[in-house]
Image (cartoon, rainbow, N blue to C red):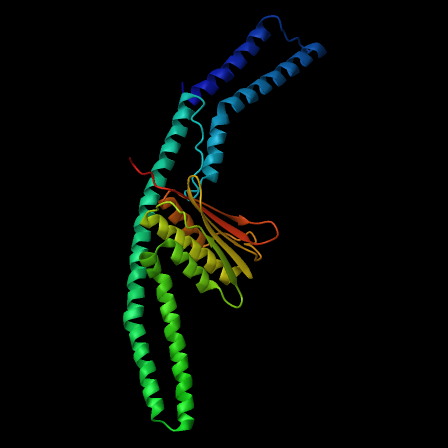
Length: 315
C-alpha cells in the first residue's frame, strides 16, 4: 500500500469513528450543552493526537532518510539507513542506498584515474626539472666558476656570490623534483623513503622524530605510495600552517595491516574547512580501502591517522 493511501485511510478511520460516535451515543443539542462541548473538545483533541502519532510513525523512516541525505559525504563512507517502513518508503531507502553505492564506486574509479594521471604528470615534471633545468643550472655554475678563475679579485667575489645563489637554486630544484617523484620509494622501499622524508623536513624551526617499524607486512605499490603521500602532505601542512616545533611520525604493524600516525604540537586546524590537500588524502585512502582520521589532540596540535589493511594472500 502506498504512503498516500495509508495516510488517507488512517485519517478516514479517525473521521468515521468520530462521526459514528456523534450519530450514536453522542448527540449535540441546540444550544450546545456544557457537557457536549467538553465531549466534542476532548474528541477533537484525541483525533488530533491520534493523527499526529500515526503520521509520526508512518513518516519516521523518511526522517531517517533525510538525515542520511544531509550528512552523507562520499569521502567518508558510513553506515547506510536501514530499509524499513512501509513498502514505498522502504523502496525509496533501498534506491538511495543503491545510488550511494554507485556514486562511491564511480568516484573511486574517477579518483583512481585522476591520481594515476597526477602521478604520471609529477613524474614528467620531475624528469624535466632534473634533465633540463638541472643540467642547465649545473652548466651555469661551472661557467661561473671558470669565469671567476680568470677575473679580477673585485669581480671574482661577485661571481662567487652569484655562483652560490645558482647552486642554492639548483639544490632547491632537486629537492622539488625529489618530492614530485619519490625515487627513494621505488629504489629502497617505504621504510627508507619515510626516513628520508622525515630528515628532509627536519630543520631549525621543526624537528621530526620518526619511529618506523621494520616488521611491516608486504604491501602493494599503491598502498606504499598512498602511505608516502599522506605522510608527505601531513608534514607539508605542519611545516606551512601549524606553527609546530615537533612532529612525531610513526609507522607500525597492526593486526589488520599497518597504521601511520603524524602528530604535531602546533595550534591545530582551528575548525577551518578541509582544503584540497586533506581531501586529496581522503581520496587516496579510499582507493586502497584505508581509513583516514584527522583531528585535534589534547594539549594542542593535530593528529593524522591512516589505517591501511594488508592485502589478503591466497594460499
